[in-house]
Image (cartoon, rainbow, N blue to C red; front, side):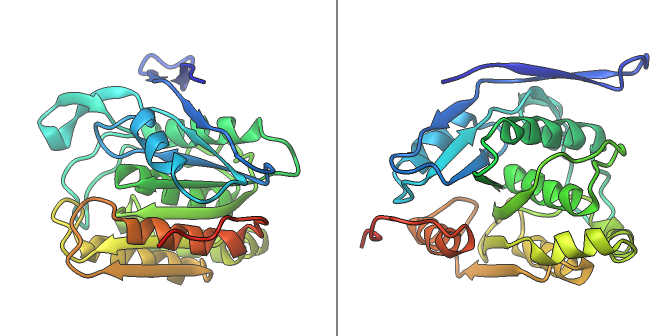
Length: 263
């Protein structure tokens, strides 16, 4: 199953940007449909390759939705156009973030999830830039709104980020104050399970950025966060991470009838 969607953010503005998302690939649950997770690919990848990776996981009760990001010029690649959830430059403490595109991507993901049945638990996961977008979505969920102020419509139950980072590291203190100033936001943040995995040998998204993002989220009120480090792992996924996801998700989403893990 695949389809295309586009968003026009800030209609009525002469500077409005249109974001055209690529094909969405769906992995149907092989057992009883208990959960749906949107999985976000990394820079220059697509939903098809993500769906092939997830199809082999022993999680028969999960439906995976794998969208494809818009194709856009990416500053990090010298303006070369490729699939990206937002424009990214060098990762640094004071790097600026493309909030408009982050909001458009987060809204696209929430729209995909909002069509799911009410009794199905929903979550977001991703790799690299996809992980960054998943973690950004977690902050939107806790605050109850996107960065542009529009209400966030979905009740997230799990977030997974592999080899990623939290966009807007410089706004950590402001995120903490926003969450702690609202009882509802603090409650949502504290209850949302987050799994972050990162390799110590990652030369694309340095380990320190993954570790710092986990610390930032924890200090902002996301107390249900697990950070797993993988010694020597570079900027890619390994079966051990996929096994960790299966072991972590099953109790978090109270999945039943999960096939025994492969050796």
